Length: 129
Image (cartoon, rainbow, N blue to C red; front, side):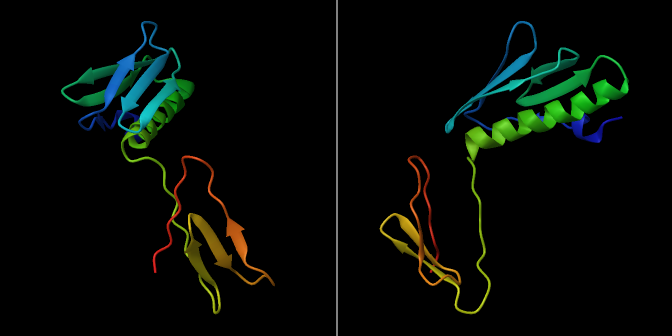
């Protein structure tokens, strides 16, 4: 019995989930974009009352593995289109520091020169004081 696969996925307001006709792909649309999650044909997805639930066809080992995996992938897609992705880094050590220079991040992390990181388009960097 898959504990992860049996847990329902809550769908926040503004998130649209559609399942294709063959049931092999779930599309998740939200305020931060669109994501598609491919599914095994042995996994069935149902939406009911703002929740998404998954079930499997049998108790075979491969089906149990796909059940938990599919639930995790769909849940991550829902989180991605609502909250987006963020990575928090912590700098520890004497003399290590970071500062924002315009939209670039300047790091003093033990090299003889400061390391400047320029974010790509669509990525924002912030450094708290």
